Figure 1 (tube, helix red, strand yellow):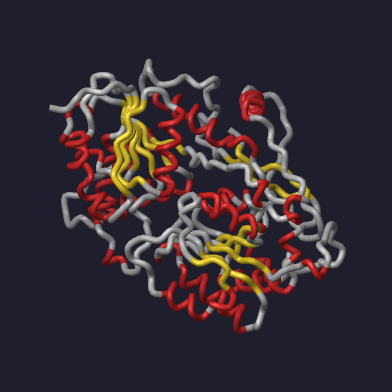
Figure 2: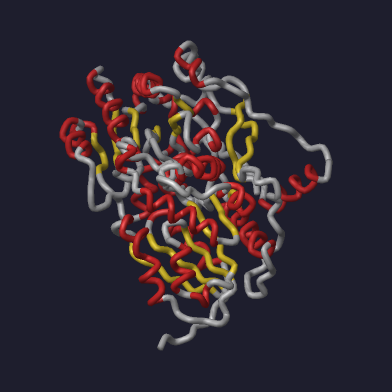
Length: 465
């Protein structure tokens, strides 16, 4: 017989690693009365298939549970059926990713069961939370076509049943103080000052009540036009605070993503090898997390790029990881699958210049000048930076102060659970989040960049709620 425990919030995570682990640890730290039950981040496919049965056995019984929070890796439908005592709880399902549009090399390889489990979990949940609008819309809009794979007797109108439960809460990125790791030229930059979250919330409340406030629309720039006129490769002579020529080191490119096919390492390494073929000087750090199976391209690229490599392989120490990001100049994403991109935001926080695909979640977070539309554009941008590395090194980048997004996430989560019924033991945060319209937790603010990289103010995403 299981011993009863005391706690109002039950945190269940079937894949306790990476961003899944970060979120669980944040909730456990910030919410009173949490009980956390997790499984190690190994063999994802087996966790998705069998975690519910394991959790049936190791989730302690308790009459004090009020809220169940879990990620979409778990088949929530199975867990509730196996543990009827959990059915009355307010069930919050968080999507770090969705399996309906998760990239596979051949569509025949897509396992129907994983996406089907997520749809069932949504139907059982009281609140369904996504880490981005892209994640939410790609999932909801794909349900109908996904269900057409069923030979006959297909269910109907599932999107209409699920959508009213859905909300967007951007992942609460923790941006630590990295001043001690920053090189001198990055310390010379003037960080973007972000107001305290309460001040921003008050401004949002005023705007919703009809009080006029300053408007900062994001300029619409088509990344396809970069081939005709690339502002990052022109007008370099009049830059301010340029480092002396003898101090300019080779461009340091960092790739901090998981070593898996959905991050498209083939595109990244083929691009970097083109830089080598052109005899351009650069340094390279490939420091993402590795799992049991590593794509063969990594071993091949390591051999071909040996002369350029500074760091290769996963860095288990967070300080070592942040130190490498602070020393790097450009962070590149070549992902064919990305629903949020914590690693890119961490790198930008450490002063790296981001280059991201003009697809997936990236246009939701990054202004157009950081996006590329084709592999050729990516290669051209990197070639320009290799020839004049001080161009990207003299930029001023976003530094969000105070880990603002965490406060927004926690307050809004508290609001969502209470919207579906007040929970007495869930911590009451000082102010309810002002996110009734499912608007993004990122807004654009005008920021002046040093030098002639970008002329005039541009809009940089900041955490706003």
